Image 1 (tube, helix red, strand yellow):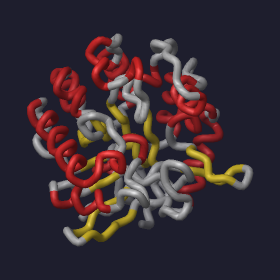
Image 2 (cartoon, one colour):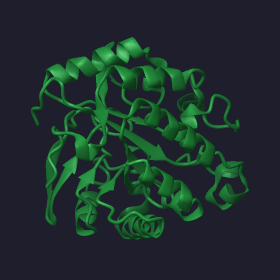
Image 3 (cartoon, helix red, strand yellow):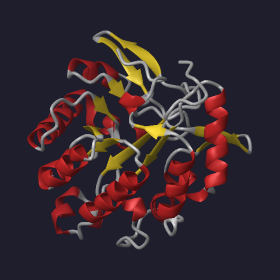
Length: 281
């Protein structure tokens, strides 16, 4: 686990459309996806431009549905030198799928990425951090399907567990070991807060985020940040969502691109494969 203070941290991207929201029916149901306004190309290309300008390599976890429809976008991600892993095919929570459907969804995503030019898929992140105490069986399936790195277990309440380790570590399954790469969290007001992704990252000033990164680096741990391309869209399409999801999806999008740029410029970042603190079995 221990890494030098000057280690590279990890920057990851969940490459999905703005309407890939778990557990929502109605207008955002999967049957309607092909009829909704598409933003994934323009927002991902904007993110690629940003990463190129500041010379940061990232790990992109791609929804297979996107890979099937935008293979040239995946080719652009690869051509820019980034890693590509799976974010599932239908952007469904793992524990909602169950073992059999999860395996099929994973295989469909791998086929879609292979068709887009990804030579080998060895990394996975579950939608909504949904490898948790309800779905630990998924780790064995991932290993059986050739995945070596999972980045799905958040050390927070609701989507994960505060008892989950906060550093990259090996987990052992009946099929063999797998590396777990959790996102950055911090302790605030007696609670564990998601500092490395979503509303927690968007609400925090670059200075606060960088202090948190420095603190974990001094403890010998690489910080893991995650964004979605749609978060760089200051005015995405608006739909009615439950209050919790509305907050998570739309809170403080304005100016996020510039805040993210400042964070990535001020600390060393790379993809998962570049980071010495991540043990790969």
